[in-house]
Each structure stands twice: as structure tokens, then as C-alpha cells.
Length: 527
Image (cartoon, rainbow, N blue to C red; front, top):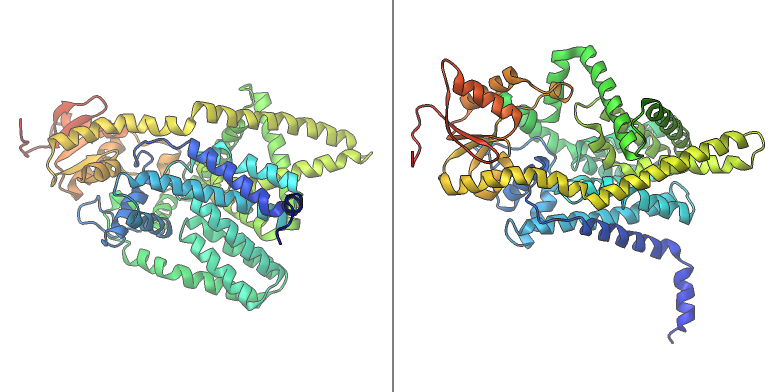
């Protein structure tokens, strides 16, 4: 017999942990979908590489860079996200129609992540329903996460995998059985096959298990993780020399690329890198809470955010120690990595949100203490101002479509180039261009980059001399038919090689967004 409707409503109302995550997932999905624009893939470089690799898998070519002459085996990105896209490629429409499918899939993953964030907040961080829901909305259905969702990037899949891996890791920390250790290790290994930094879950879990003297569980966890990651590491090792040195930074393995940077600069370079990234994180913090540009206000805001983070992290380590140490280890690697740190921080934004929510909760709890009340009220006022800034930041990002601006800026530059290539080159021509991945995907031409990518460039962009040297190395490594220069680095290289006493390039024409050259001694049709 069917229960009366008021009883069914009561049953639903009595199970908020069932319907609240569904509601939050819908909110995150709708927000992400509303931000999707029909813009080309390849405007962010990473998205183009993911799609090239997915195309290679989906068409049976293996795990290869189809855009590079000789189609060498790929070692830069772990294979799980390209494999996920390849599955969608097999069942979805042909390129470029499947780009919309990829973006909607990322929106679904973000929705799933929102549900998992809420459940993690409730079951592991032990937040009440309202704080857990607010934390989920504020740090999942938000501009930083949507920025990485609307492009074909791996962050949404990584966030889902990270939360699942942390569920497993926290469980083995609480119940260190052999089965839980093996599951946690396998989950962490799979996470590292989505994004390499996911490997941080392994030492974070081992640290907690070692502190609790659970040596067997720690060994099993590490063993399972290594077993899952081993095939990829063997693949990378076997194909480490598949590319010339000039392409290793952009297309080679992370390990060799970072080792080259450290070898050239040593500890002083690493120290400068850490300081540089810490300053960049401070600047991103100022932007995220939209504080005024006056230095005293900015540095006061920085001190407040650091204090809040420290307080919140202390609360997190008491509740979910593996997650807390994972966040600490992850951020440590981020500040020592020669790339824009905000990109990586936004990849674990909900976990950063837990830290701040716990800090706020602790501050509000101190207001009733006669001893700490003045400090608590002062801190609460600072939290209120910072929260208003964060809401304002998200409002601006949404209403101004920051993610669309970023994609449109690149697409406006690259689309005219692709149209010219399609109309004026033959299918067998090899291109050198700044948007080589986009040009390959939309024109079918083989294409290599027009510049290199080194760890040193993060702190000091390469100048004309380095750009010229890189372009000359690329021209010596590959037979190129056309050089299309649209970035400043590529233009420096082109101008030097055109104007040199022993010129290696000749100028053909100027496009609205690029210059077109060709190596000397090669005739061009229609000239």
C-alpha cells in the first residue's frame, strides 16, 4: 500500500544526506553548463593535447602525438583522462561535434564532484548539513572550478578521483586492514594516472599509518599504488628519448623536464622559484577576495588568510589527517613547481574550502568564550569582509564570463590562421605554429610548436636570443613547410631568422593575427 504523500515528504525530509547532495550536484551542473560556449578546442594547449591523445586512442593509433611528424609515443600526460575522452569519442559524434560532448561530460563530473564534496564534508570532515552545503556551493559551484570545467581539461575527473581516493585513504587510516590498504593504494595509483600530482595521496596515507605504527597496511598501500602506476612509468622510461630535446619541455615527461631546470639552476634557482610562486599565490589570494590595491591592505589580507589557513588546517588534521597531509604535500609541490600555481590550487579547491570553513567554524565557536571573545569577534569581522570579497570575485567571474574571455582571446587569434592553412596548404605540409594542436585537429596538418618550454620561463620569459635558438633547433629537427608566428616568442625567432646574414626563413605574407614564413630553398605553390 502506497504511503500518504505527507508521509513520503517526511521520509525525504528526514534524509537530507540523500537529497542535499543531489540538489548540490544539480546546482553545480547547471552552473557549469551555463558557462559552456561553442569555442574550439586547443586554445589552452593542454586541452588540445588531451584531444589529440584521445583521438589517437579512439582511432586505434595507440598513445601517440598524432600532430608531430613520426607520431611519437606520448609521455607527458598520464593516460586515464585521454582514455575517458576516447570512450566518448567512440560513442559520440565525430570531431569537432564531440567537443560539446567532452565539455558536457566535464560538467557531469563537476556535478558528481559536488555530491562527493558534500558527502566527504559530512562523513569525514564531520560538518553539519548547512556548513557542508555552503562549503560545497562556495568551493565547487564557483568560478575557479568552472574555469577548469568548461574547457577539455582533466581537473574535473581528477577531483572526482581525488575524493574517492581520500575516502579510501581515510578508511584505511581508521581501519588498517589488508583489503582497505589495497583498495586505497589502487585508488591512489589510478588517481596519479589522471594527474601526476595525485601521487601525493600515497605519502600522506603512509605518514598517518606510520604514525599509528600500522606498518603492514602502509606497505600494502604503497605496493598496490606502485603496481598500478608501474606500467605507465615503464612506458615513460621506454619512450624518454622519443622526442628531440627542444620538444621535451612541452611534450616530454615531467621528471626529465623538472630535472633539467634544477640541474641548470640548482638550489638557488629552486629557492627563487618557491619565493616567486608564493608571491603569485598571494596575488591570486588578493584577486580571489578582491581586496583593494593598496599594499598595506593587501598584506593584512594575506596575513589574515594565512592565519585562517593555519587554524583551519589544524582542525582538518584532527578530523581527517590523510586529507590534511595530502593538502600540505600537494601545496608544497605546487610552490616548488615551475608553473602558475593557481591552476593547481583550483584543482583541489574544495579541499582548500574545507580548511577555511573549519577555521571559520572554530572562530565562531570562540565567541562564547569570555577570554577569547574580543579576538573571535575581530577575526569574525575579518572573515566577513574576506567572504564578501570572495562572493564578489565569483559574481564578477560569472557575469563577465572570465572563462569565455580566455578561450575567445585564443580562438580569435587562431581561427584566421586555421582558415588560411586550410585554404592555402596541402594535406601533407608540416606546420610550425604557436597553436599547433588546434591547427592539427581542425586542418589535419602535421604541426609542431614554434617555441620551446623550459622551467626557467616561468620566472623569466625567454627573450629574442632564446626564441631564435629554439626555432632554429626545431627547424633542424623537423622538415617544416610553413612557419606561422603569432606569439611574441615566435615573432622574435622569425624576425631573427629572416633578417640574419645567413637567413634561414623567407617572409611570405602577413595574416591578421600571424606572420607566414617558409624555409629558404622551398618553392611554394601560387607564388
